[in-house]
Image (cartoon, rainbow, N blue to C red; front, side, top):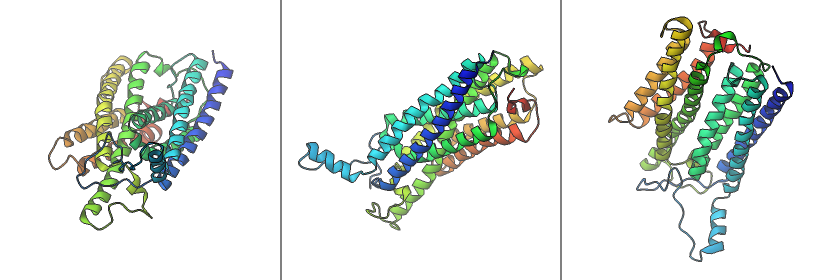
Length: 334
């Protein structure tokens, strides 16, 4: 039985979430625009995890020191506001899925609208956890929240379906196992891929600083790249999230094969969805291996991780909506 009031509440929460994420993206943009450039220390050392090297405290300390720090980092308040909006958005975002699931009396990832919404939620939660633990990582918020806001708009415009019961093919307890694991893995890899992309940009900037072609700490006219966390911090974020997401994705592939045997009588049939899920697994396995291989552990490995995100997005969009196979029902609402 469908509860229209809960379904309507879910739709309202979805709209509010999009607005909050959009405002958060604007706040993170203001933080980058008005914040202090991230210094590139000569010894290449990091302070904390992704946090910028702090400037020396003023001699008088206390309140005067705090005021001086605020003047040096005028964009900090924007970042704090954006982070608050993001956290409120996460709560409401979770409410979108909870109310939708309660309204239909089932798990809320039975179609592409719900799956996409859940993947985005996992990505924002993964970023939020890191940003709360390491405030320096808030400087990548724009590059996470802007794609998230765009993705939410596109999901609402092109994937939305009315709340309803599951299609017959999905009425299995494996939905809770396989699809949940796939959702978690995809959302975590989303953050990992963005971190690797930013690492490629930031590491090139730092190489130019080391070569003396640009000043190390420009006081005026500094670009966005100068305000990003250090390249090592971005690379560490990309690696740690990939390490966390890889076993989850591995489990999702295995669980999918077991479900396929139960539903279709075979573990593997090279269906387009299965094939590209396996290709994604191979790419991320290659990335993790490259991170431990001399000559590959830095920029070449980052490119592999970016490729992994491209494969994941391709698997979500092209395979579900263009190609045909046993998973074609995934694009249907009911």
